Structure formats: C-alpha cells, structure tokens
Image 1 (cartoon, rainbow, N blue to C red):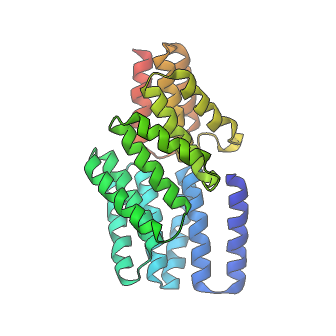
Image 2 (image 1 turned 90 degrees about the vertical axis):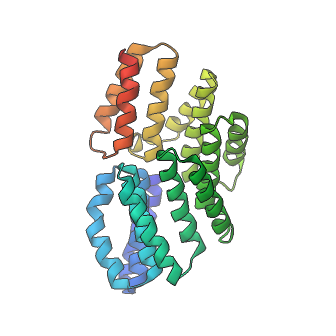
Amino acid sequence: DMDGALHHFHAAVRLAHESTAADQIAWAHLHLFRCLIDGHPNNTALAMLPDIRRLVTRAADPQISAYLHSCVAVLAGQMGQLDEARRHCELAESLLEMAPNQWLLGNSLVSRSTLAILDCDLERAFECLTQAKNALSASGRSRAMVVCEGSLAHLQLLTGQFEGAKDNLSKLLSDPRTPRAALIGLSETLARAFLAEGRFDECQTELDRIYSGTPDNQKLTAYHIRWAAITNGRLLVKQHKFLEASDWLHNVERATGGTIDISFSAQLNLVGGCAAA
C-alpha cells in the first residue's frame, strides 16, 4: 500500500520538523525519498533531491549521508546511469567505514549486485549478495534481507537454476514475515521463471497477482511493476499474440513516458521490435 506508506512518511516528516532535531528531519525526509524512488516516477524523487541534500548536510551525520548516497545509487541505477550509481555506492561505503552500520552496508551491497547483473558480471553479483546477506543478518530480518534473498533467486534464474529460483521465491512469497512492499518484485521474478520454462498459465497467474493487488494510480509507476509490464509483453509474444503485444507495449510506453529509465526503455523497444517483426 504505497499510498498508506506515503501518508505515514509525510506524517513523520511533519513531526520531525516539529521536533527541530536536524538528524530526525533528515532521516524522515530520506525514508520518504526512498519510498518515492521505489513506487513513483523518478522525476518526483529527483525534484526532492536538492532539498534533501541540504537537510542531510545540516545533520552532519556520516550514517545519514551514507543512506542518502545509497538512495541516490538506486535512483541512478533505475535511470540507467550505472557509473553514477557505482560512485554513490562507493561514497556510501567509505562513509560507513567511519560510522559502521550493517543495515546500510547491506543495502549498498545489494545495489552493487544489481549493477553487476546489469553489467553481466554474475560472479561479482553473487559475491556482493553473499556479503550483503552476511551484513544484513546482523541487523535482523528486514525488507532489505528479503530483497537480498530475492536477488539471489533472480541470479539463480539468470544462470538457469530454475527449480532453485522457484523454490526460494515461493518460500519468500509464502513467508508471513515477508514485507508487503517486497511481494511485487518477488512475483515478477517468479513470473520470469515460469516464462523461461514455457509455463505460460503460471506466468500469467503471477502477473495477474501483481496487477490485481496494485491501485490504479500506482500501475506502471513503481519499478517492479514497470518491469512486470515487459514480462507481460514477452508472454504475449511467446503466445504468438503479436498484435495484442504491440498494443500492450504501446500503452506501456505512453503511460511511462515521464519516467527516466534507460534500461527499461531499451527492453521495451526490444520486445516491441519482436512483437512487430
């Protein structure tokens, strides 16, 4: 429930300002910022960035600064600016050498693993995820740990370990401790696994689960929902529903026109070309 999360984060920001504590104000704004990165068009988060930088500078806390860099790394990665994302991961981790925090370190390492996957360096991705899991295990079971385990399952999928990927994803999806915010990404990865095996009905079931549980005002704005639209396009192509696939992808392109995501745009055009060929 992204709208519910935003309501609480906005309340936290208001209360933090009432406290006049610089560190609390910065943390509240950063959590709101990360929520917007995960669930809204990235131009919304970009518009906040100058003010957040000013608040983080005022707080003068290395852990707060590290979290800002970690968030910006995610945002830059979503936009396809991989070198910039890596730079922010490095800055976050250098700050954490002065003020250690295992949860923040784990988040940065998960981002590094995603960047390694985008670079097709799967060995490096596995190393980062192993390090991230070790770091996050010290901070308890959090959403970041679920994302880490989901990323490991995604890596299994990319290396052809379909059964292992599906087993791990199914366990995470059925675990009552899994945060609701992580379910969409897990379902999208499981849909990809079913698609790779040619199990189209199961793939469709996972995609339907994503869209049925997403409010209309959030469809195609959140990162994983955008990528689920690509998976749906691939499914239609695999089913030889080429005209339907073309119409679907055209609507997705129109709905996501305000989103800066180079990797997504590339894949959208690639699948669109397959549908039109």
